[in-house]
Length: 254
Ligand SMILES: Nc1ncnc2c1ncn2[C@@H]1O[C@H](COP(=O)(O)OP(=O)(O)O)[C@@H](O)[C@H]1O
Ligand SMILES: [Mg+2]
Image 1 (cartoon, rainbow, N blue to C red):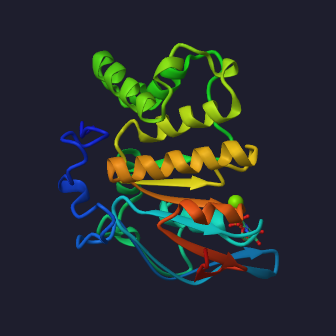
Image 2: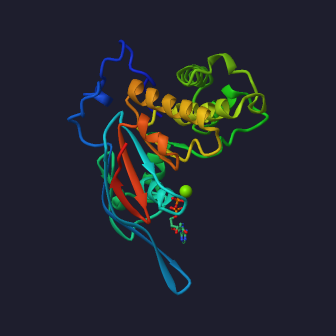
């Protein structure tokens, strides 16, 4: 595991990993490039087309909102970006690597070190404290205890939960639980976080606070986010908005 600090020290100076942030589009290569992506599922004798020639580029520290109804293709898109499934046609280039050319092992390693995942439900272990929940991925990766403690504290501070570290999951509100899940997704300093309807279980006020939090983290830490949602208001906090309809991705209006 690398031990890149979650937040660049030096008052938000752009670091090597997020050169050019500060509102300007970074000149660096995109974190993610999706080209003419098509996904068809065989179902019985028929075919379901979940993605139709999707194109997308995401740069360091950018927050992308993808709005779409249930069944529009949001989860399929995130699964292909994460290399969890293979496209029928088209290309996913993640951190400069064409996923089709990586082995399963290399993809797994890339997911473990460079990607973060947030889902609709927080999926915390109820018997563990907030801090211990955030440490789970680092325990699996055999990170030393002092390093785990330092990083989990840093990640929980980043999501504004430093004072709740010792609370167990059931002692936290829904929004707080989701913030712990975000801290857990950030603790290994990923370059891209895939958040699949992260506000789907929250009331709109709490949901908006979570979206704001993700935007702040993205801009502070230079981490890119792709956030799917069916909340039309999500567009307000994103750097770029797309709509997905029946597998067709188009630039969205705010
Ligand atoms: N594993 C699968 N096998 C067959 N069809 C699928 C599978 N996964 C998704 N689909 C279909 O692809 C379409 C897009 O699904 P999905 O990406 O889950 O949409 P969303 O996340 O926007 O709700 C839907 O019509 C869905 O039924
Ligand atoms: Mg979905």
